[in-house]
Length: 287
Ligand SMILES: [Zn+2]
Image (tube, rainbow, N blue to C red):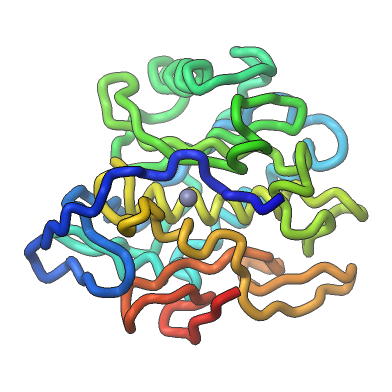
């Protein structure tokens, strides 16, 4: 089974629209469809940790801490700067993002989710003021592995969307703990940050977070950047990692920053004809 990484592929056909303005570069295998990108420097990232994050395996505070470190060090890396090749008519994506706030929800909507329940859970955080209502940020809804979400593990490993919540255009992404289905959503069941063999959920989620956060920034309202098949920038490199190195525990990794090794899919660079690479301006790889 090959993971798709995303269940919300945009199916809007390419209408051939040619945007104007110096910040939009086209002709690199991905099309601009007229909508805005997120241009924050940094783009604020908000996390809702849903379910039981004081459990076992990868459902632990160690995973929370690791992903916090990841989100606090990803901004402006040579990898994330690939995102800065995308823009709209008023400017470019910065390539910077940062963890701005996070909350825990131990299960206000139960353990069998569908999108309407995720919306309700996020909305509750906004209306209570626990998280700011920020149309320029990205909200990651991250679930522990005991939580079901319709389509997760069978149709997608994560997805992003937009929705009016608390009166604002809110961009949110679902990130399920990939240890619910390692064979479907993890490139390797033991990752470079695994606490023990076969507990790869934290690294698996890091990979999905890169995918969904890139897309939420370059295609926040699902009307900016995607190709004629509806593939957004990360879809075009889905589960393609490029060259790797081997960590002490035998796992593969292809990035190092924030004091850790990471295994993250490549992103489509919107320049030099377009291609998947690990760093802005680096060589393109097909797998
Ligand atoms: Zn995607």
